[in-house]
Image 1 (tube, rainbow, N blue to C red):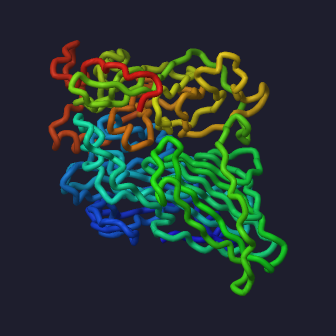
Image 2: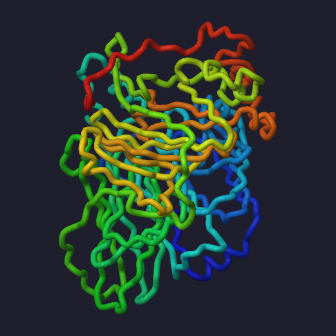
Image 3: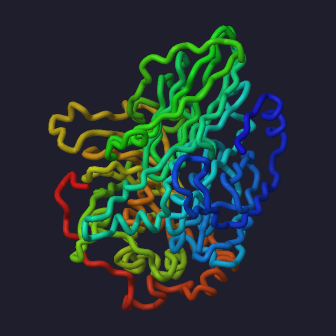
Amino acid sequence: MYFVYGIACLALLSVAHGKRVVENWDVTYVTSNRGLNQTAKRGISVNGKFPMPVVEATMGDTLVLNIHNSLDQPTTLHTHGMFQRNTTYYDGAAMTTECAIAPGTNFTYEINLEQSGTYWIHGHKNSQNFDGLRTPFVIKDPNDPYKSDGEYLLAVEDWWPVTFATTFAALTDVTGQSNPFADPPNMLINGAPTAPKLDFEPGKTYRIRLVSMMSLPLYEFAIDGHDLQIIEVDGEYTKPKTVKVVRLAPAQRVSVLVTAKASKKNNYHYHVTMFGDFLPPIPGVFPSMQNGTISYSANSPFVATGTIPSEIFDETTMQALSGAELVPDRGLYFNATSGFLPSGVNYESFNLVTYRDPITPSIFTALDGNLGLNPISYGPQTNAHVLKYGEVIEMLFWSATQLSHPLHLHGHTFQVIERGLINDTTSALKRRVPKGACPLKRDTVLVPTGEYVVVRFKADNPGVWLMHCHFDWHMALGLDMVFVEAPTEMRQRIKVPQSVIDQCRRQGFPTSGNVVGNNAYNYDNAPNLPHLLLDSPLSA
């Protein structure tokens, strides 16, 4: 169930500081159509029902996730946006930071909440996020600089009538006869097929937390006759910016403040639009809209809806609440592109390297002496980059395919510095953060087709961190890579719990050595694919 918070509840949460927030979850299969007019499928949730419970805590608490895996396949849970300082082994990135939780076994994540803001928790193994293993995660800040009189949460997800296994088979079908859009999704808001009513009282200010739990489409949020003041992006406070509409890509979160009208004489509609200009139009699906109610009085008429606004979310026009622009020590270039194996299967890649899980989880290789300093140790398909402690990394992302890419970096937020078009030789359409500004920080940035984005982050969080596209399709097709951050400092600060080691051992995975568990430069049987045959630029 999704909740509304008033002043009294906010005050209560602010004093309940430093507690242990315990969730006991049995990860199970649940067959459902989620109340939609579409075929029921076998999805994945917890405790035998949809939706998953929303997780709520306060900054300074400890989140304890007690997990039992009742599936017939391994599972993990990723607390998306958490930095996991010195606890990279609880990040949930299977075969990067840990082994997955074996079927029929138990595992506990214990996470110190040193951040506040709007996050979510989702499956990070076998694309279980696509099949429903996802829920919002809200961490309150007792010293929140932005006060409100009440709060709403709107989490939006796409629900497909087929499992990810069916979709992946269509994506990798070399005959060209399969269409992954043959069974398109519908939209759920707060786990339901209809938009909830939001009650406003005249003159009060409400915080609305927007969460995208989409696996593929984008969505936009707007309210007739009301401005939206952005105050938080991906868990980071921003300087206020007033807009008419907010656009979110998969995995992104935004909080807005909305000031109610001075009287109860009218009610209004709000609009949640699911779309994707990179997706084939399907009547009633792409795009599609849910209209909700902003209710001032049960007896008041609605103001007629006019043109519903739509616009890109341009981070370069916004600023973080604090933090100067980072000066890069070195730059890395990542071309998010697609290509073909000789078999004809189309895969995604960074710089034509398609990711495959190592046999030894990368965290153990990083902690294994001098092996961890050498990118080769992590295997050819892990696409690992070793970072020095404290260096500032500038990344240039380029999308050379006909699909956009919401790129997410675990363990960090990054500053968004610049956006532009790849073929804009005059730089007339380049958008850059002004000199002297505080660049906006976020953990997931959308790179539209034919565009580039420049971001920067400081390597001050020793650990092993996955970076990947948050389209579930693309992640499964290999658009992933790994940062091994400060392996020397990792060995000084990080001690992997026995529970993590036990999960690996019961599944037969090494807990030391290189990609295949060897202690020498012997990589026989390492996951390895031939180089992709480059597809034509701006191809699907």
